Image (cartoon, rainbow, N blue to C red; front, side, top):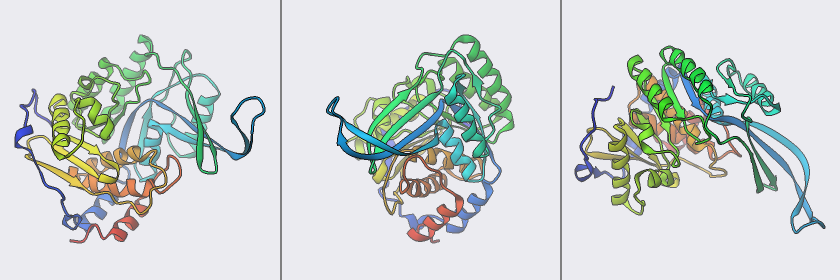
Length: 357
């Protein structure tokens, strides 16, 4: 576990090694990690909701206003927000323990039905009748998203609900193998709740992987084991605009020092991942493994699911990041938020020849 206290900045001593060749990774070792993640319990804490895709055809413009008329042909419902992370864990062979807030509405019923269909427990959800269950509806025509409609409550949860959530989390953390905190800035995460999560996890010796939100103050995350911001989030959290290698190092180091995290993994899309680690003078780079990019939504959820499972199985941060990037490369080739199986990761591994000893 991490040492206590604030670390001195290591910005000047960190040197980037661009690139680290993929051939450095051991194929057999990564296959063993994929086997070891089976059955690992990961507690997923965060805002939850439903993604609804309304699919249709546009043949004419409305006579009422200059907008297209969509002739609806199909509707698809998927698990959204932190629930998509739980879905990824389930698909990878892990056991997600999902806790978040839902309302007392039709969307909550649809949400529970989706969880049950995916084999994910619903018993850890907390009902707050004053809130509406998050629903994101996307209107799509011929693979082109025309409009997104969000139904959600953004106000902070009331103190009584927060106490119920705190008790739930305190009981669940010791029974799991790892914790994921998904912050979508929709009212669930408070400073007090974040402090509780990190405190209980530290006592139970559990790693906490955090998908941060740029709208949340960086000090909320002090105590995390690993943070996984994307480039835009890293810029806003650090206050450094990432334009080149030097500014990337400045941003990553700033986040690492401010949070006292063991690792900061900045996900950079087609530019792969940059890994900053406590006590290390090297920035590790992991390339992107993607054959075809169709839809990048949900890729971050896949990465943090694989990362947390892999770390819980004894992987190093570099090994976990390689597996996460392989999984993300598969996910972005699918429409919308999607899950990835261990077999798909193994196939990607062979395709790229990424793990030759």
